[in-house]
Amino acid sequence: MSQCSDMGAKLVEIQTDEEGRFIMDNLPDRIGNEIVYTGRKRNANDVWVFATSEAEINTTVRSWSIGEPSGGELKCGCTSRLDSFVMVDCYCTGFTLFYMCEIVR
Image (cartoon, rainbow, N blue to C red; front, side, top):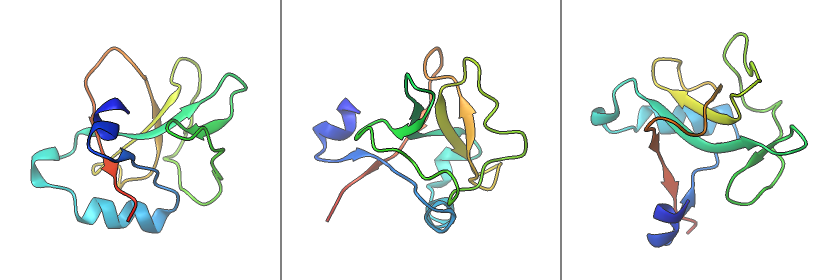
């Protein structure tokens, strides 16, 4: 969040499948099939929110991969080109992830 903020942006908030497909179609080749953090997290009440704003996410307008979210220790939302940019839950810490920032114009 701080790196996005330093650029005058915020973590991307992919709200619909249409937005997810647009981003997938425009990802730089260097990202390949890597996992990308999408700024989603489960809060203390086990509700999915955007990390930047804490706004609750309407999970019915964004497709999850089969069997997702699986829960447990996986408290962040990620995606990848390999998964056609549908959502998966992932670990929030312990490994390096690509992330995307968005600028509101």
